Image (cartoon, rainbow, N blue to C red; front, side, top):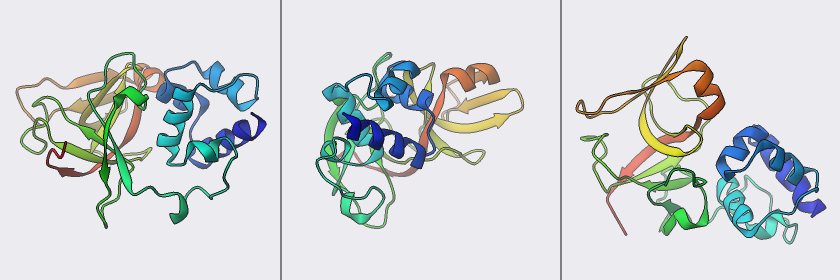
Length: 203
């Protein structure tokens, strides 16, 4: 497990993630992530799969069974994982959230896809459409992004930060915005990425 611990730390630091951010992705405590990086705890298969999807590497790479370099064309899969509806309390990249894999479209950046349920982002994103998400830590004001809210819920909204916190705005005027105070945003929320493109339901 020493090889796994080293690679987890290297990937996290390369991606400029904190242990708390990785904990949100996995649905565990930051202390557990620390234990994984210090080889004081062994990862479950669900944790390995979630990390592989998030960092876009193979489980074999995480375990030290192959040496393809992350961030090169060697380790880019030919498919995007397609995530379905995200249930409260379930880690975003849990295996049960993956409902299919979609062939990558040349020229379109993206790290994963998300199937939309609901009409809050209509007319730009229709119910049951699929968004391609590019992982980004910082979004421009007004950008459409994917967010973890309250450590559990996954939402697609427009991003409007200010000195007091963040407003996540629906495109559909019939839906109220989500207003999040600064301390709550910093402690319980996270930007997963920017919506890079929208495609029709292919599943």
